[in-house]
Length: 460
Image (cartoon, rainbow, N blue to C red; front, side, top):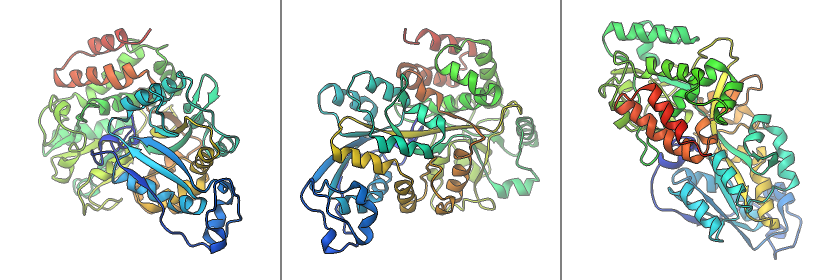
């Protein structure tokens, strides 16, 4: 899910970085440009020069406005808008952005009510499918389609509905990370595990040492409470069975009550439901349900737990001044495959740009946002944002977590899959699955009952 800093942002920036009022900003900051290349009347395609020459392909729409709606809030939305400031000034296209914490519920209302935005940044492919069924989503222009060559084929499929490509990917986040303290590991003589068997052995070793618990975790996320546990199961399913079973599970060809998914849930039960292993510094197993995901990693810094499985966007949750790096206070390693025969499983999330208008200025913005040039501009604004666009020079990333994430997200040999709950019908992926997984942890509800309840709620 996109909680980009919330879950899938979306990273799902949604509920993480900040929850506040929607902001509408028009960016018209100056850009180095000669007087002859200043935007002119809409429809003119005067030659741009100086720093603006790079935007010539998008010229000719001065004086126009493109509205954009998303779940990205400040401060992340501030960085987003800064990333296209020069584009806006040089082309004369004003991008009017509004971010909402109720995006997922408000977008369908706006679309059905005739007030759809020109562009929407959608973090869930399932929501994209819902919007396409309204008949209001417009297919992207040819240049946006061509720009998809810089992304792995899997990403294009997530922006495709019933065989038609509708939405280009925008951001990406890596879910498959385990956060830990390099200093604590070194002091205890622990090595970073590279296999699932080694990870489980390390967990048992830490627990038996009795100084702390190996794992901490939290499911709390406002109305999205429960999503971290869905990520944990997704990691196990992908790492145990590979991409084919994962895909069949998303489409409900393989049900939650299928022996394979039950087996994966039992792996998770033995991992994050183990009272000897969790929830260091926070309480017992049931406290995982009541602890916010933002607070879940804090006990690592106090030495009360050793590891937290969370996405790359969790970097924003560490306190200011935390040294994050291979030799720092906090670092991360990639979660190993449950079955070593699965080649480098990588779970990720991200966002997609969908259009509800085919006006030329809207298509110009779509084209720009699908380029490696825009992704590079966004990366340079602030750390904590990654693109899976293979046209981005890895040297652009200055943050070590971003570098680590980009390495795996752009690896053509990885078994990459998008967050499963974001691909499932909304009634399941952002509804029943969240509530049932919360109950699973809060009240020790059985694996079988949890699975049966989710299957029973699957839309016909």
